[in-house]
Length: 278
Image (cartoon, rainbow, N blue to C red; front, side, top):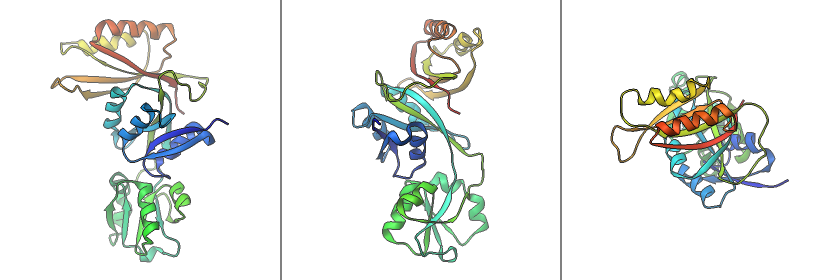
């Protein structure tokens, strides 16, 4: 089996590592990175052969920083997957529920467990840079009055004990992840089935410009699953539009749609064509 060094943001045990496993299985060799930019740079510079990044969450929306990185780094989306976010309360072995007074985790994770904290007002929320990192810190410092909120994988990796499982407010909490590679590289063989294309474009700031741009897909009965606008740097009040289309770039209708859009857009870049995630 060919081993694939795969960069992701966070410590070992982060939800991003769960996405890595879903996308690449046992072939992946995890490469934790502190920041999203480091993930992109690791792949761009060849330190990693692949990268996995979160792009949107069903509760908190899009990860805007990663949309910007997709534009700035010349990488290609090769796959996608969704991870069900299950937050667990994890403590050091020997620490029981009654001892816990402080709970560490990423601010987003803390905010996704507000009902749990409301039901347990004695607990102090302590923001930390990473969910899995909070478990790692707690175990290294052998904290006896604290717990962390993270994945079951983080508890397994660092030897923590799960005190309470699935404490998140909303069970329909999913994060969508992209698998990235350098253009021209092949990390995994393309899967069969429905495919999706992600692209970014800009139009002139004129009446009906966006309508005409999107008509390139509507006129050919191509379904858009997402559209996201981001500010265009250096041009105040102008925007980039990120679009996901349920189509394969090899399909005749999609080729014609892209040709049509290219005539209307000031800038167009296809970010990747990949199997639609389950």
